[in-house]
Image (cartoon, rainbow, N blue to C red):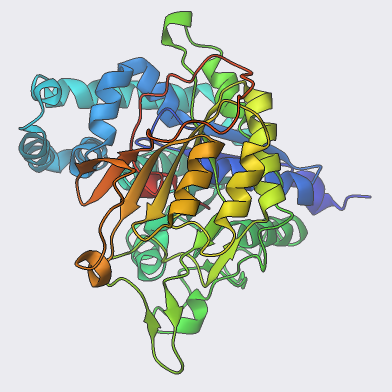
Length: 440
């Protein structure tokens, strides 16, 4: 039997604001929803992929051009967040879009007005008074858009509890956000499953005790930023047993669009979290690539079993009738990759996989990927081995930016596959480790 507090705390919302890749549902929100549903079955959880709605409104190609440029993306909502500094935002937009023929044609004030109109319309359509908590994932290109939405909501619904998390809120950034934006109540440091679960359980039991909340992995404005222990992570010991991500809200929204604006999305999945290259050596500090900030939200390296990975891909592609899959890992498991891709190949589906590999990946590993349906890989080459490693001639290579995107085209498929849908028409070729799409 529920107590009065539990009865009063029955509904939460999870929101992803612009500018993630519109062709993919949010793996952060999909993973969190599935996890919370399994732990708290009576909790209503609504997921809002607002970025997809905005992409449909302003045009997919235009949205994509914006989302691929950090400062272009942040400049527009910064103008809405700080109207008195619109000139500076306009100057930044002009500078960063100067080399793009599509964005150069845009009138900044007209564009920001249109974005504000659509953002406010989306916010006004929802019954936010029925929610007790809203959670925001904030990663690459999402900071100013999330802050604009949070300030809008808190002004009109001051009792609504706002929790933020994601790659852009880890560690010291959390304290700055809490100091500068009183509208934010709590910040999750690190991955979100366990901290958000404990926040909800705490508030269901003691809803009036928000300021004194003490949960590992959760930062409040009452904590000392100089106390490193206060920012400790609370993460799952293992990824095995995690439920399949729930992307239903994304696909439900897509179904409401005009037929000419529908497409086959790419399904994000994760095999692992963290990086096995980043590790502690004795009493020394953690080692790894000095330039990399992709793993700030994790301790250690964990990966799922081969059978679980294959089962998730099978479940998601069958449920959502699309065969394009992006593996979101920063780096695939050092041991076990051949087994994992062997299990995926046994699904006998005409998959189009996309993932990230190290430049030192072996011939056997690359062949196993190709036989499972891997069509493109983004490979990185740490500076310590860059001068020693030669990319194998079996990979057709085209360099893009600091990494390289390669088409695995030279091996014939080892067996015929059974297609369950037409081929995906995803338009994005961004790296799967784009921080817009990192795990929760």
